[in-house]
Length: 215
Length: 244
Image (cartoon, rainbow over all chains, first blue to last red; front, side, top):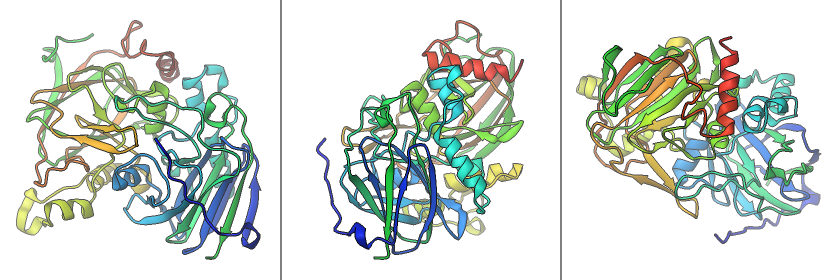
């Protein structure tokens, strides 16, 4: 499938937020309504596990099933409205130089690693551990029950017409990015994925960059 | 223990009919098999699972799909919790495909599609939606909106085309088709029989579903679900540690 790529003309030098998230680290921040948020895959083929919440009522959160049902397609790209479980739009993807992003693959966890790879992989660092540490240190009152099915920016999880689902080699590359406009004040929760057991990071987790602009 | 296709064993523990658009919840314990039967054909049963001893452990759609490299459920598949354990195993299935990605309808979707109804005029024929139905059931256990997760839609078939587009297959399930869920954990089962959100049928037409439960024992060593893939063998190991 040929991907439609949409670049953005926002200048990183003018960004009000510009941070590097190292591999295996979480990141949390609020993006105000009308502001633009960009995630850059600095070295390519990195999975960025991401959840969004209404910053004023975190019980309203991103819903993978509502998002894909509403647009009738499992892949996220420019034009996708990221819906909450109440059906309102949290963010809209406005630029995408990768082409498509996953929202079925979820986040890795110590427990799912024991199932997927081997019982002795439990000790390995995982996205859910990053999520849990980030929310436990924050004051939003979020707990494990708030970690619903997330987005994996830059990750490639194709589903075939006969229903097979695989983690395939990434379609992203160095400096590819995705940009979105917040439609309400949103709380962003990111785990820059530390998975070493499958090709979602090309077996080499790398840093990403997050930026935001007021317009 | 398995049963001849189409017939439940004579030692059935209980049976119950879920009316059209009904919501239901109950505890199904380890070693019990619960059969869902599509009485009229074309049914949809939205389902969520929670560990009855710790509601914080719940059905996890991505972990279920990733472990088994599948986007749908049928015989041999299991339903994973977010803690690497197995709530239930699909030991028999005559429908062939159960949807995992379509989610549920909500009040606004049902209102737009079928029209707005109220109890005052329609009594118990007023239109139900999946989101409110599941929320209503879990609230009986003091669970709330934060506890709703991506659900299973038994008897519904949604496929994904090469470009990622979703396709709903109307009337996928035939009259009398059934799926047997053998529970490997003590599980709070939450069900709603509202229509699938992608069902293009413009008429409000949810179907009746029969629940039949019996003692089957947990998964034997040579089980079809346990031996489906090494991932499931490890999932059963994780689950059995809870009951040692």
